[in-house]
Structures are given as C-alpha cells and as structure tokens.
Amino acid sequence: MQIVVILIFVACYAAIAFEHPIKVNKSASALVGAGLLWTVYALSLELPQAAAGQLGEAVMGTAQIVFFLMGAMTIVEVVDAHNGFEVITRRIRTTRLATLLWMVCFVTFFLSAILDNLTTTIVMISLIRKLLAKREDRLLFAGMIVIAANAGGAWSPIGDVTTTMLWIGGQITTLAIIKGLFLASVVNLLVPLMVASQALRGRPVVAAAPGGGENGQGSSDSERSLMFFLGLGVLVAVPAFKTVTHLPPFLGILFGLGILWVVGDVIHRNKDDERKQRLTLVHALTRIDMSSILFFVGILLAVAVLEHSHILTALAQWLDGAVGRVDVIVLIIGIASAVVDNVPLVAASMGMYGLADFPTDHFLWEFLAYCAGTGGSILIIGSAAGVAAMGMERINFLWYLRRISGLALLGYLAGAATYILQQQ
Image (cartoon, rainbow, N blue to C red; front, side, top):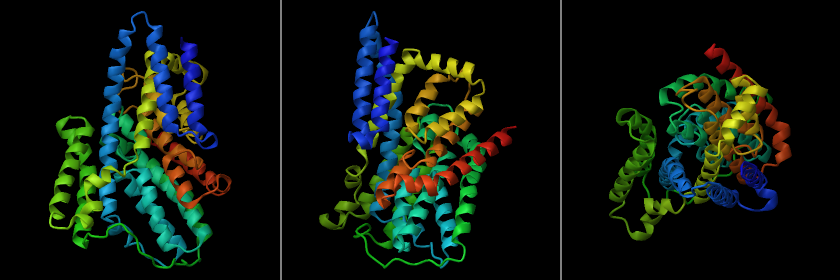
C-alpha cells in the first residue's frame, strides 16, 4: 500500500510542479491526488470506517487554515476596492532610482508582514507601474519586491501561508517568531538590496505617464482611510486575539471580518446601488482566489494520508540517518522550495517531526519558517509572490535566473547564517 501511496503522491506533486507546461491547474491536481490517496488508504485498511475518523481530524485542521485565509483575503479585497493602499503608496516619492528601490523594498517588507507576501507583491508591482516608465527598471524592482515580500512574510505569523500553517498548528507562537526571525529576515533583504542599489546609483527616476484606475471610485478620502486602517487593524489584532482568548485564529479573523462588513454597510448605506456595489464585502467575496483555497485543501489532505500511513515518520528517520543535522535538513528543504511549492513541503515537515520531540518554538520550526518562506525567492516559480510578479510584468524565467536568483540565494544564506549565529 505504501508504494502505491508514494507513487500517487509523486505523480500529484509532479503535476503541481509542471502546472504551466502540462496546462492543468495545480488545484485540480491537488484535489485529484487527495481523492485518490484517501481512497487507496481507506481500501487498504481492515476496517475502512477507521479512515473516516482520521479524515475528519484532517479536515478539522485544514478547515482552520482555509477559514483564516478566506477571511484575510476578503479583508484585503475590501481595502483594495476602496483603493486603501494608496494611503501608503502615494507617500512614496523620490527622484533617485536607488532611493526609490530602498523605499519600495522596505514598504514591501513591512506590508507583507501585515497582509501577506502575495497580496503585497500585487499591490507594490501595481505601484511601480505608476512610478516607472522604463520596463528594465520595473523588472529589477519586481524581482526585488519578490525578495522583500517573502522576507517580510517569513517573520510574521500571518505574512506567509507556510508560517500561518505552523502558527495554527501550534509549532510557533507570535512573539517568538517575530523575535526569532526578524533579524534574519532583515539580513535576507539587506544583502541583495545593497548589491542591487549599487547598480542604480546616480540614475534618475523616469516617471510613468499619469493614469487613472477604477479602484476607489465611489469612496471618499475619509472612507478610504477608514477601511485601510480598520482592515489592517483587524489583521494585526488576530495574533493578540489568539493570545488573550486562546481561541483559534480563524475565529478572530472571521470576527474582524464581520466588524469590517458592518462598518462598510453603514458608511455606504445612503449611496445608490450602482456606486456602492463594488465597494461592498459581498463583492469582495467574489474576488478572492478560490483556486488557491482549493489547492491548500487538496495538498493538506493529501499530506495527511502520508502522515497516517507512517511514510513521513520513515522519511524523517531516513533524513536523520543520512544527513544527521537538523539545520542542514531544513536548509535543503528551503532550497527545494525554490523548485516546488513550499506548502506541501512544510505540511510534510509538520508530519515528519512531532511536537513531542520538537516542542513549540523549537529551533526546527522557526528555521523551517524562515527557510521555506524565503527559499522560494531563489527562482521565480518558487513562491506565490514570484508567480504573481511573473504574470503581472511578464518576467522571463531565464532573466530572473540571471539577474535575481544569485541575489536571492546570497540573501537566503546570509539570513540563515544570521539566525544560526543568533541561536548560538
């Protein structure tokens, strides 16, 4: 049975990794893989009914992550519909290209810790389109935004989906992950940023022609600011809600979403239906990326089969015997996340290593959050932020490999060394 399960999972993983060449959405591959794996696993048991109970446990853990992601995505869509991110982006003004790069990267770094790296990448690339006329400048900025977004998401429990998985799973806590990874994440950004900015010294900003956008139409400046700060306030308050109440984070995010929904309906209640339609939370719900949500469901349920069939335990024992050192194992996982999706890698790692042997906030979990979160920057296809940038600016894989991958790898290793030294 284990051989069949492994073959199905490898085939599913290959379909996810080669999503673009085979032209089959990775969410479809993940869902088919999960269905096949649970079917084979259930039929292999003497009492197939036992699989139903195990599936129920897996669904409960998966649902917490899905509800949290849906709530966070909807809040971000509401803020974006009001053009709320302009509260930050309109303050970024300079005539020097190197200075602009530093400003954009640091805004990206801190914004991705509050929102998430994918959303922040989309917001910041939309910004540089308004600021820069030259395509070669925009490409360099887009590559650095990917690095900054992934670095910023690694040290926050809500900044990257893999860190969120570890947080909800109980492997890390809010204050510990911020304290443990902030310095390493800053180094991960600073090293490539210093190299890239040197190449831009003395060059002026060639501004893009002014243009208008649809977002924010029908909302005033005060409404835009209110929804921006309320939305960010809800996201920032979720870790505090979990700490104070000890309730799961998904309840905090749904509670905050309800508050945002009420406020939005109240401030737009006197507008005609056509003006307020695209500003409502109901409209925002239609804009969230359900394909990504279903991908997380499929891959987490698929990995749960590997856990229940004890394949992950055997893999962990083999890695311990072959490599021996936990830090090297995690470094390898981080580099592997540049090639394949980091969600199943982290999900598998959570199944391989238990909290009994590696308790909450152990070196393994914090270092895994850093490596899986930032290792994806090494290749353009290694993270959701990179794929988004690739699509928005039509970045060529080989261009990114030549111009950005080396910088990202340098930052990844420098940040990893910083964290290891910090722990010692």
